[in-house]
Image (cartoon, rainbow, N blue to C red; front, side, top):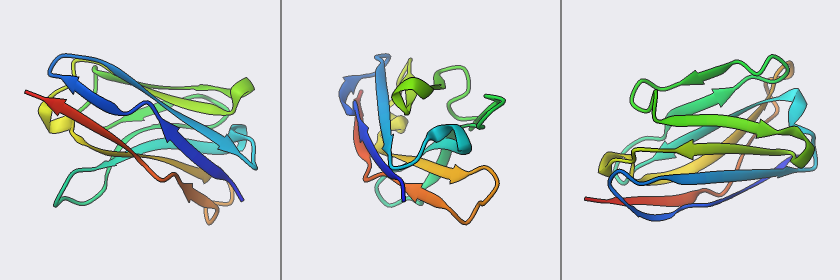
Length: 119
């Protein structure tokens, strides 16, 4: 089992920045593809960003490309999401996700952290 705990959410003005953190325990993230998803009120959960284990290749949703950056610190077993130039439409609960790079049936979610961008 892997546990994921997000932090770093909050209230920020349009154009501001936040850095989300997701600390993993129980398993090392180096064997997992780590990602961030978000869910706005009344909408379905959507993909934001992913970093692939080992090679470190990143993938981003078009809506946040160029503004958000995903990264990992393997020594801290932590994945980050640096969010710049935030917009009101980025307001959502942000969830950390981990999926084993080989045994994909092993996937885990964090409890989420609220990000609110005021206009």
